[in-house]
Length: 127
Ligand code: FES
Image (cartoon, rainbow, N blue to C red):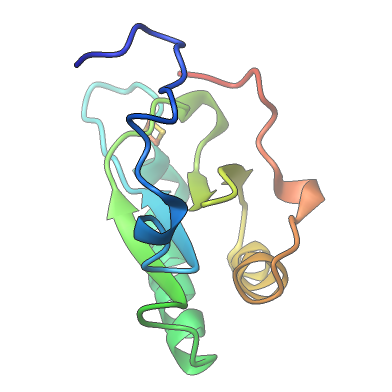
C-alpha cells in the first residue's frame, strides 16, 4: 500500500517500536559527489567527517547492536545546507564545518543523547 506524500502511516502499518531499535542511534552522512558544479556534500570534506565519526564512535566503544551505527548515504536532498548528516531515531539533521563539530555530535548526541543545537540544520533548508 503506497502512502500519499506527507501522509503519516497509521498504527496498523507501523511495526512495533521494538522492531525498529536494533541500533540505539544511527547517523547517516551524505557523501554525494556531483561533477556538474551543483552543490554536493563531498565538496565540503564529508568523507573526512564520516571517517572521523567512525573512528570516534569506535574508540568510544559505542559501536554495535543496541549502540551506534555510522553509515554513508547518497544525497539526502538537503544539499543547500551541506555537508549534512542525520541522526535517527530522533531525526535530527546537522550541518558541520570541521572535526570539532563531529566530535561534539559524537559526545553530546550519539553518546549523551542530547541535541547539539548550534549545529542543527534549519528546517527550511532543502536542495
Ligand atoms: S549532496 Fe548532500 S544532501 Fe544532497
